Image (cartoon, rainbow, N blue to C red; front, side):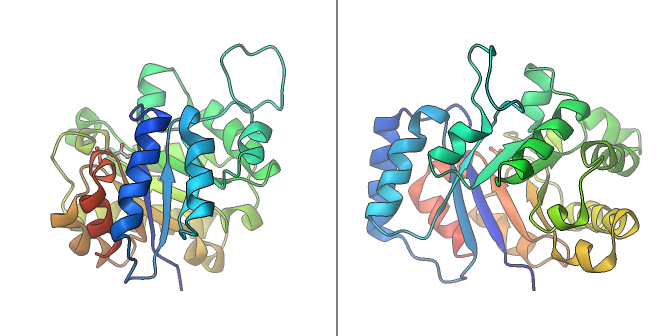
Length: 251
Ligand code: 13P
């Protein structure tokens, strides 16, 4: 019922020229045997080039961005608005990634404003939540992540939740090579879905997609994708290598 969704978060990697080369290389051997939905989320400077190649080569890959401001326009030097992304053909927007929370002081309140702005501008948010190692070791991970969920979704309607992707990304698993076990990852994704049932309804909770992110690679993707509540992956490092990215899509 939920279409699996594999998205590559390129983070601050690749100039637009490198992005063009990457997509050309990807195009040579691209295949999607699983029929999952695929997205790439390049840095803002590469969005236009990536969009043009995806269209020209007729590749069924969606375009995502990694961040945006919640205001429509105005005196916010250095920021990018939802409108600007929309005009570039962006469909998905990663919101509240732990790196933005950690290095750019994004709070649940800001994440909530951005999620609202995304829906208002017809962008589909990939909303990230996840706990630190300290919180995991204190045994309070579920409580912490559900609190993030509740706060980030404040005032969001059930209709919008059906277009939402939630990415559960434990911070201690990001870029460390240390993946959560599939059982632990699935337990958290199940807890998130249960919370969506209580906040919205069973029907809505069953439509919302929940990705896992954190050191996902070709060797662990199939096990993760085999879990009941994991509907996809948000991938950093491995999405930057053509062969690995194709292997992930064909989990
Ligand atoms: P890695 O796959 O490099 O661990 O990054 C995960 C991530 O942060 C995706 O958003």
